Length: 85
Image (tube, rainbow, N blue to C red; front, side, top):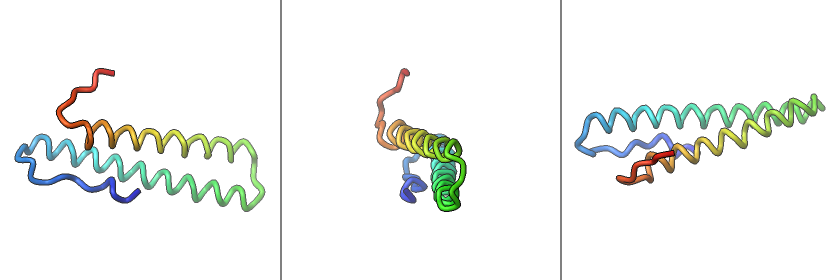
């Protein structure tokens, strides 16, 4: 997941470069959050923790990964298309 922090450089548009820098920062935070949630889930499972906590962390990991993917697709791979929804 560490490839998300890459910001395409040299677009010639400082406003776009700044915006992509913000996207990169959000993606990096999502990556760290996903990694932390996975670490927490493993710890809870290992200690025989609460099943509800396991389910909640698993759901959080799934949703965070979806948001990470969507943000990548909507920004880095969107091209000139405008997303309406």
